[in-house]
Image (cartoon, rainbow, N blue to C red; front, side, top):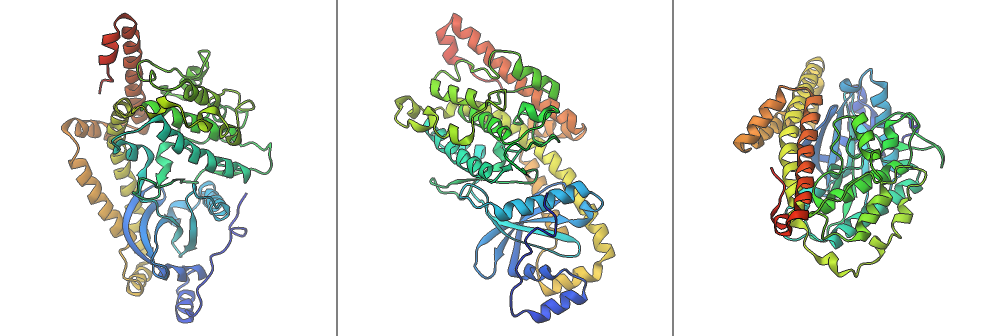
Length: 442
């Protein structure tokens, strides 16, 4: 378990004795001097305990991402504080081309700052949606990079525990851009090869079955999540539609296989791909293959299968379009709630420390956290105004419900999606022409 004492302290720049002395008088931690190394820019997102801003390293000129966490939001929450130190410790020791790169960290009296590589290429699914063509071979190239990152993490006894498309990012906008795995907020370092984690964590729909039981879980849970991502990459919809933990556990254990490959959406996908997915989704974690073993799977190794050049994007887009529509509406509602809470926290803290904030702004003429939150709130409202009338209605309805209801709404739509696929499959047995014409309903 990481603590503040065994997290590597950030190196302080030389030749800044005056600033260092000023910070000491102001009651700032020594590492706060590093804040002057960065020119802060636009806000990229907001979470429960803080936000993420783009910044530029004034020494190197490199653009980076800075996660800013309000200490007041973490005050009294030992679990969240421990997760912060765990994340810092993990990031400082992970070095792989397919894992977001840790750059720096420092703190002020009221905030923590974590500086990482800035991935500007977009999220995995959003990027695929913009392509003109997407083939099985393209999917293989993506999965190979994910496997390489997971293999490295597991070699370091690190379990990510939250692998999902939102945490798979492209480094830049180029066609040859690599992907990186991000967000190690709930990752854990195991004490040994056979060590397990008891407390459940993750995202329903991608989390492995054993995580939701009392038996404990370890490295194999990341392999399951990778299998779910691969399934979704190849068809555009989630393999699981359960609305609850019990429902999910029942769903993935009810049949001879944990998932089904519905016609016609899987008709042009090779048997090797389906076998790969089923291997990754082995119910017994002790029998589930490792990342190293999956890198040697026939689907990964054989790049000469002619059917892999078939454009599967039209079918994939049908599932992605529904997923994106729901997700945009839901995320806007969640974002508004986060912004409101963070602004209230920051304003309250700023009132107690107004002089310090003014000194910070005079010393470093940057946009304050409160202003950034305000800008992001305005940008969020602009995005909402661009939604279609149906999406706005959905957004309004979601705003009046609890998060549990939101999850239920998503699961219900996914359920209707699968039911539509199953109906199409049954119809195809009666009329092959009807099968070709069938499609997902939005």
